[in-house]
Image (tube, rainbow, N blue to C red; front, side, top):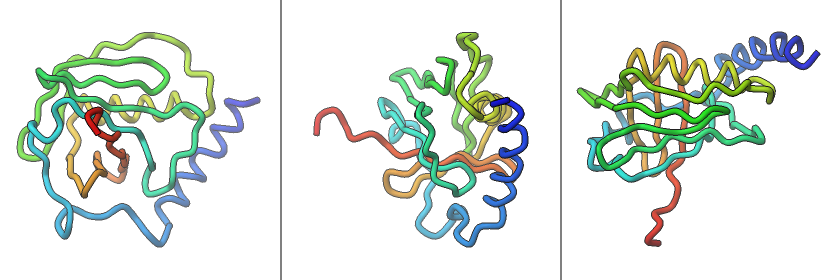
Length: 149
C-alpha cells in the first residue's frame, strides 16, 4: 500500500514543485561555481527537492573527502571518485550498499541522485547552500557547520 501511495503522490509532488512560485535560484546572480578547495572536507544535508522543503525522517547527505572522493547516504551509503570540471560534478563508478529503501520515496530520490552524479550535474553555491541540477531537477543541500566552530 505504501509503495502504491508513493507512486501516486510522487508525480503530484513533482508537478506541484514545478508549478510553485519560488523555484530554486538560477545560476548567475548570487550563485557561484565552487572549486574543489571549497568542497573538500565539507558535508551537506538535503534541504529541498525542486524547491520544496525536504522533511523526510532520513536526511540524505553528500560529502567531499580529501582526495575528492564523494560519499553520502540516502538510504544506502555510496562512494566514488568525484570530478569537477566547468561547474559540472561527476562521480565515476560509484559503489553503494544494496539495502532496500523502505521509507516512502527514498528509492526514487536515491535513484535520481545517483543518476545526477553518474551523468554529471551542474553544481553551484549560494552561501552555505549547494545546488545540484540536471535537466528540470534540482537538489538543494545545506552545509553542516565546520567541526572547528
